[in-house]
Amino acid sequence: MDNRLAMTTKTGKRRRMQMDEMPSNRPTQFLPVSFVAKDWQVSPRRIRFLLCEGRLKGRLLDNGYWEVAYPYLYLLGTRGSALKRMQKPERKPE
Image 1 (tube, rainbow, N blue to C red):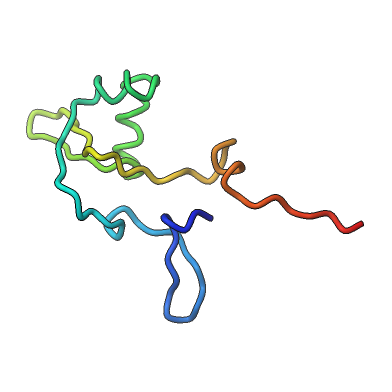
Image 2: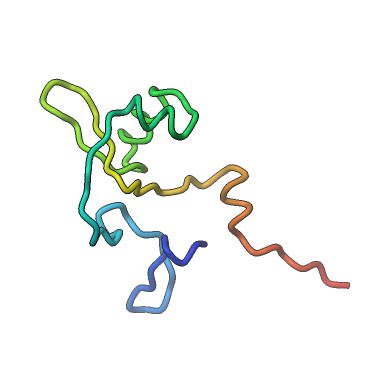
């Protein structure tokens, strides 16, 4: 688990941070979904899906459009190659 996305509870156990617990001491700007999609080379639909799930920080405007907070605050999922790259490799007993 990445140290930036984990925190230790009072009992000493580590758990994943929620989006509202992540540090945000920098000034926030908001970018349109289409700009972020081009920047990340994914579809705008994928960016909106991440926003709806709460895995990407942003805000929903009154007219139904989403804006993404910059600098990006993104929570990794529980599957996929990015998560596997972050984990320490398990050593096999010889």
